[in-house]
Image (cartoon, rainbow, N blue to C red; front, top):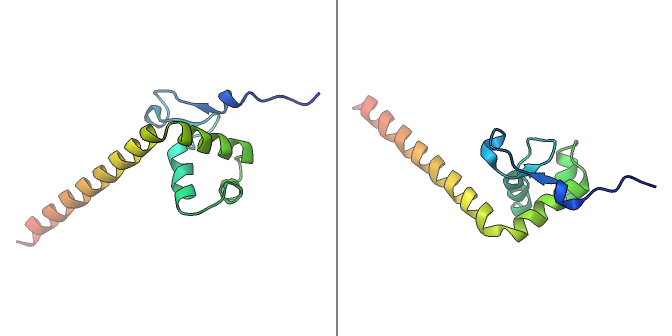
Length: 100
């Protein structure tokens, strides 16, 4: 009999890895990263090909987690984008002061 994988074991979160964000078990690949590529139009097969050490089942598990917990992942994505904008603005202001 083949090894049976419980789907619920494919996504984990631990505080000391990736800030506790949900990720594919045994990897550092976050659900958010998979979702980013999915939103760019990549198919699950293309994502699995791009990250060679992930199986198609792992990619589908990440996407299933996203669809089941969309609000959590979207909030995380929005927070990261806001932080990137804040840092960009802060850098712009410090450059402006240096140029004055």
